[in-house]
Amino acid sequence: MASVANPIHGVTASGSKATASAALAVRIRVSPWSTIDTPEARHAWDALAQCAAEPNPFHESWYLLPALRALDPQGSVSILRVEADGDLIGLLPVRHERSYYGRPIPQLCGWIHGNCFLGCPLVATGLEKAFWRALLDWADREGGASLFLHLSTLPLEGPLHAALKDVLAEQDRLAGLVFREERALLASSLSPQDYFVESLSGKKRKELRRQFARLSELGEVRFERSRNDTGLTSWIEQFLALEHSGWKGTAGSALASHQATMQLFKEALHGAAQNGKLERLTLNLGGEPIAMLVNFLTAPGAYSYKTAFDERYSRYSPGVLVQRENLDLLADPQIEWCDSCAAADHPMIDHIWRERRAVGRISIAIGGKLRRAVFGFLLRMELKHNPTGL
Image 1: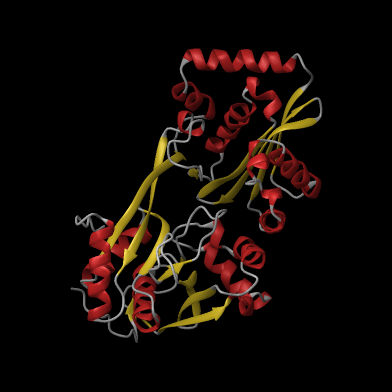
Image 2: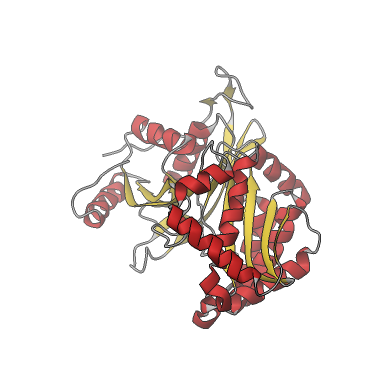
């Protein structure tokens, strides 16, 4: 069984904020999210995002604060900030939950929501291990009634995951990968046209050309791409109306179906534009949008956040046509990859984007021997008596 981590008074770190031999004084601040909605706090937060080991737009200030204002007005979420020598080196929204996926099992977790597609913390490059040690030490001391720490939608490759595995091993701390999936990723050195040719069969490409020709018979077809805020307010309203007009509106899952998600979408897109991280694609027919797409640009990566299309024109595959245009991301020298944010085995994007990104949920032991023993039992039950570890 894992032992309790010792309190951190200093760590060895490397990277942009410290040399390999420097000892950093690390401390954690955990505050109600409303207390860091200030210009000073956002300035440090935005600086952290610029040097993060792995980009996560959903935990940047321009997205997370609107999400919290819209979805957590009661203030149940706290912001955990790790500081080293006074500099912000890590940030994660956290909450104590009384249930675990519908079961009455208390947990301490990273906070995500239905429109948050990545749960990894923002951590300064080179200080990943320092962050994980500090987080786990805090969870040991402040776990309350929670039986374990649960982190959802984490990338299962990259520096954050590698550092977490190393810290868990050095502390002999039990953890389990309780869920794993792979979602479509765009990452290639090919040109947009060459990638398109290699991704789709000649028969499918011919069918798309036919559909485009037939669509053009109905009116002028034009693609528009924008990375600024010109006309953004009206564009947002068009997107919300377009999405709500289809099956999502009927099912009550469209952004405009709920005031909170509509508010989040509006604030987040304006915030992304102000920070130079928004890209919009529009497929217009006769001057009216029939397919729309939102990307968040977080170099060296990007995230394909939302798409919508007019279902009256579904026979012409407007969603696929706008995704074909989206392949131009491959020509952007600042963008190395784009996460689809789509569910695994998505019926459309999986056939166009050939690469995959693995993400998963990880549960981690915290606290003393008794709590860890209970967690070990629960983990074995969840994994059917066959814990896989990490």
